[in-house]
Structure formats: structure tokens, C-alpha cells
Image (cartoon, rainbow, N blue to C red; front, side, top):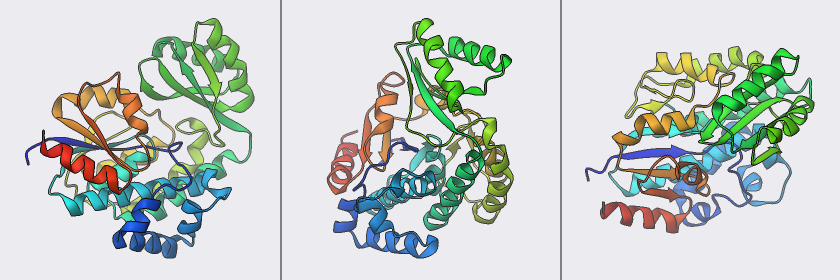
Length: 312
């Protein structure tokens, strides 16, 4: 099959209790991956994913849970079809899942890695009350200018996620973000709302997490890429361990250029396949592409996606 596919992976915020359960109940491969991840990390993933608990919303648990379900979805897809990615791409945390799909990270290594990433992020943010907020309906330039003006006035706020035209996420000190709400609304934002986040991702507040993450990455990243990965930092492709080691630690403190990545590579693919719970990125991509978008989040969507791809 010659169809050119981009493999996509969502990041934090896509989690939901019960995600991956259909895979677990119907696939020995999924059961084994969950058991292996539990043994490696000491996290009871059956409990974390399938039972009511408070941990799923804590970043050190959220990140490995999302990645594990995405890795299972990808593994089952690859076992069922010969389709390989033309490119792989993730949103924030999703870039680590993209590295698994590209063959540059072992899935269970990646679960351990992002468990550490979540701990490092939480530790870096533990000394002050931080958060994130979304701005809808304003241009990048307007939001950037507002953030720059407020930083000049002593606030700590940064535009950090360029999700789609008119949708930008801002990170910083929570009380400073609250100051931004009326300012953004006065600038004609359709919405300016604090998100339920306990970390401030992709901004200088995470600087202390960069070095320890770099050390762990060096142990785990391979120099064998079966497809290019799109960097959140540059919105360009990379395909070597050396590049990964330079880019991934900087992803902690630099903005996620997701919409720029879509713009740069949409011409190179025929369709998009999103792996993991739900279809979060499908919503973001509506403004960015007219090409088909499939998702693999349970056994039914796995089969449906494979059948749909045969028609392309």
C-alpha cells in the first residue's frame, strides 16, 4: 500500500478514565505491555487506567498513561498492517510517542522516560503556584504582544502552545495568568480561560528539568529512525539521536509549534492517523488540512481505520 500517512499522538489533557480498556480486554499484546510498564515503573497501570483514582490527573502519572495507551494502539496497528509512517508527529508529550512510532524509543523505555519527565516538571513547578490558560479568537501576534508587555511589567507569562489559528495556550504563574484574563478579553478574545493544569509547560519555569531529562534521554534514545519525527521546537523534521538529544530537552522550555508543523508537512502526506485515546488532534487539524483523519483508540476504530485506508 503506497498511501502516505502521518502518525499523530496527542499530549497531556487527552487522558480519560478507562482509556485503553478495550485493548486490554481483547489483546494479549496490550495486556503484556501494561504488565511490562507496571513492572518497569512500579505504577499499577490497570488501576491507574481502569479504576477511579486521583493519580491520573497528576502529571507524573498522566504522561506515562497517555503514552502507554498510544503505544499499544500503534503496536496493534503495526501488527495488523504493513503501513509505515511517512512522518510521525506529536503534540508536546506526544512527541515521545512519535519517537516510539519512529523506532527511536522502545515503548516501555518511553513509559519510564515520561514518568520521569512528569516528575521533573512537577518538581520544577512545586515551589510556586503555576498554571496554563487558553486564548481563543486572537492572532498569534496579539497574544505574543500582550505577554511581552506583561513580562516587561514584571509578570511571568508566555505563549507556549500554537495549536491552531486563533487558539494559543499561555503558561506562567497562576496569579499572573489571572491578570491576563480581562486584558485578553479587552483585546476581543472570544474566550480566555484557565485550564486545569498544575504545571506550566514549555516555558522558562521548567529550566531546572532540562539537564536531568537530557541525561535520561541519552540512555534511551536510539539512532535508528524508520521515519522522521517533527520537532515541536522547530516544526522541522529530525531523524537522528544527536538531533533528538538537542531538541527534546529544549521542548520543556520552548513553545510547541504544532500548527506550524501541520503547515510545513501537510503537502507530504495523504492522511493522518491519530493513536491513543479519543481524537483530540482531529479537532485542531480541521483548520489546517482537508485530508482524511483517522484514529485508533479501541479495537473497533483499529479495524475501521485499516478498512478505510484500503480505499485510499
